[in-house]
Length: 557
Image 1 (spheres, helix red, strand yellow):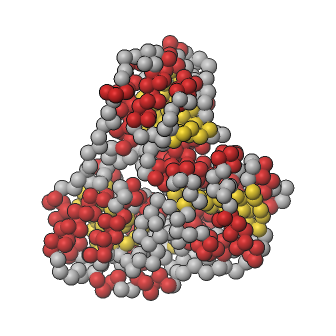
Image 2 (cartoon, rainbow, N blue to C red):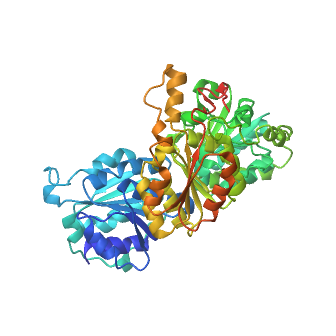
Image 3 (cartoon, rainbow, N blue to C red):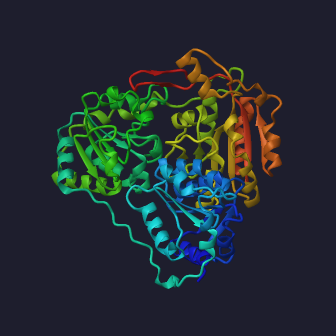
């Protein structure tokens, strides 16, 4: 069998149903057999980076791996930002790149670049396959690597002559490698429950690993039994319903006014972190965060334990398995838990941070936009967001009641992630309504992918908060360095017409300049059966609530 055909048959057997990519001379042998696949749908993107973001969004929405495919040279290097974006958030993607022939590797041939070496720092693992017979075993290892332990991105680079070679291969003999669950040590589980039982004010941190393991139900059940307030990290937003009695909302250095998450955490003595990484936007000043608290850290990746916080107890485990084991041990002991009194105040505390419309200034107040998003779109809507004040407001103010519905670029904060990730998410969820919440500047990153949404008639709605500024950068300059330069973009409310841009890519679009017109515009976006863009003129210089430590958040709105 020709190697290029073997690759497609392996993708089919590994469960790949969707591939996002752009054909090119360096990968055309594989595309020949993609064309014959009865089970893989190919979506032709407009930029290689977007292909990876789409495959990324596909997994975030469904838990199923998609492929991202492109040609050699600049096509492959355009993958890098997408690879980094997915990998930092532990999202598995099968990335496949074409390559010049093996005889020309390292000789500066046309569109010949060592993408396996370039991408290695931002992938879980990469390969450049130089021996045709090795292709099946490499792909078997790649899929296993992507899925096992902490998930991540893998990349396989394929020289043309390798793709074209004939090998002795029978797809019937190929079997995907099974992934063994990572289970917690029983003694560590007992010690963790001992520590939680002795705590006066324990708290649970639900991280993105909980969502990846589909462990949110187990975590909530554990919290309910042990009476633990639950703080969801940004990557776990939606893991516990907004109105659940134990929901202590988000915490960190970019949270809303009067954050109950920060207040509850600062008043805690034992922290159970499940599937989290204790990253800087969550912790802020690490000395303030640690205080004299004791930590129990559950993570599937051993190297994550002790990297930021040295825990009292470190448990290497799948998040769901650990939550189930902790619950079983707690139930075995029975009894009333000391923290029960503390959680009774959470519903009242949440009332103090309920989102209401803002007061408009020289444009619509950003809070008004999120108030209307919450009111108009239902709990089945998926959301993507990339970076900027718009993303921070989204995290602070959007209400999410279900997991795998809020799909942000977390660790990377990538401008341009939003639209292609929404395309992948909508495809994965059976053409589900997906909303991109983004800024005017971010809209111009990978905006060409609107053409893909238009071609496929995907119900992707883009909500642009246009404040004619690089607003997050302006805020950083203003408060950290006492200046503002090169961040004002008045042209974005003047000579630039985002409605015409969207219409040029085959989308319906409208502009909203007054708050009274906002609900109708969002209703039309919600009801659209294809892509719909709503450009909203918001206030030019509204700042986000943020700080450098969780005990000193500067409040603006």
